[in-house]
Image (cartoon, rainbow, N blue to C red; front, side):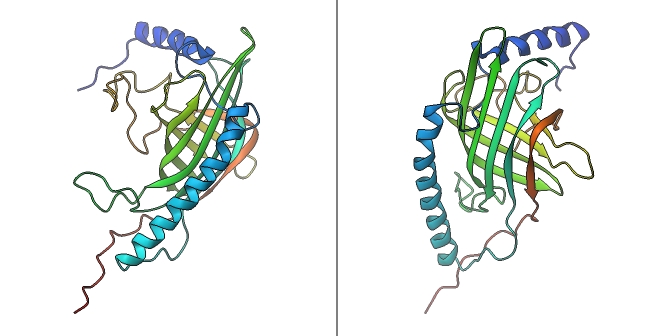
Length: 240
């Protein structure tokens, strides 16, 4: 059973979050693609990778007698958020994620998961107190949608403040009827006692795990296309 945060731990967590978000440890943030030459340089490679993965997935689907008919879940957009613990900072997230069901085989799970995904996440965090900007570029590995909300996770590929190979989780809510879009992120305010990740680091994030979208989007927004979870694929019939 997990321990509940006491008021003392809550205050300590808020202080730790502020420190993390300054770019001195991890939880800095991200590039919306225009902030860093590294992010720009990564785009062609990411596109090529996505194209190659899509081709491999299509070939695999055809081989096992499945098809990807109907809508595909996706999350796209970019925006700036207001984060209560760092209200003066400039924090931006850009995402281009699409579901590719059953495309990433796992040990003991050769079909992969229905929430397998691909795409790119970029985020940046400018701290006016130090004049520094932390950023990261990450590869999407999971996409889960429900109406106008979605969660994605991604593995950090390039960064100036995070840890390469770390999985981060982001939640999105599409703004409608005059209400703003919203976004939440997995570091700083959740997963304090969430176990360890694949590298033994505390606060590990599993695939498609993210908190509720707790921050308001003040600029830009996100569009979410929902799709129901597809059934487990069946193997193609064996030819005589």
